[in-house]
Amino acid sequence: MLIVFCSFRPMGGIKAASEIFKKAIDEKQCNIKKVISYACKFPNVTLRKRVGIILEELGIDDSLLRPLAKTIKKTAISSLNRSRKGTINKRWRVIVNAS
Image 1 (tube, rainbow, N blue to C red):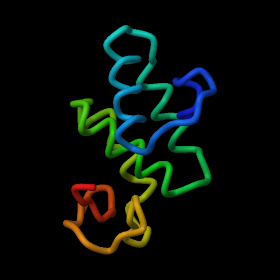
Image 2: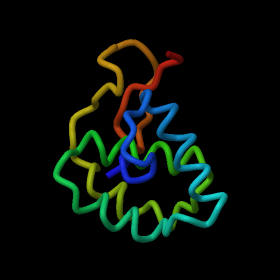
Image 3: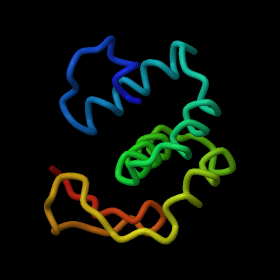
């Protein structure tokens, strides 16, 4: 799903994905409601969590993010980079760390 925004080039992690999302949003090339709708249907829970965190960090309104947050509400806490150290983001159920 995220690969669409980077012209089929590999990304460098969640930071790069966040920058790509920000650019697409700033340039009005991205329909956030559609992105959230597609993410809600995506079978990979970790990807839904990543999309949620990125969009929240970009300041997307909570009312738009609510349907996505509901899809991960009863999932296990996971880590975005396989490290178990960091703080837990309770809304997106992930361990967030500085790296």
